[in-house]
Image 1 (cartoon, rainbow, N blue to C red):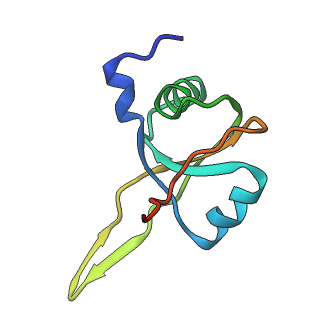
Image 2 (tube, rainbow, N blue to C red):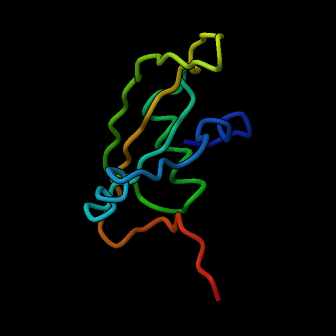
Length: 99
């Protein structure tokens, strides 16, 4: 699958939480992705950006959450989470190494 420049906006940023770092032991990486993207598009974007082989992708539309700032009540933006499983031997370096 050819990835065009529009597909580069699919992956927004990686998720770095306690649960996500536990999943790194299983060679699974979590990303926030565009809500309209589908699994083949996410797979193509990950393989193109990080030069790895993707085995499986699980996605979830997470519910909206309330956000209060003082007296004003609003909602956090809608987002979609993707958990990507890589093949054996492939890794993605999410943490910058200090020299």
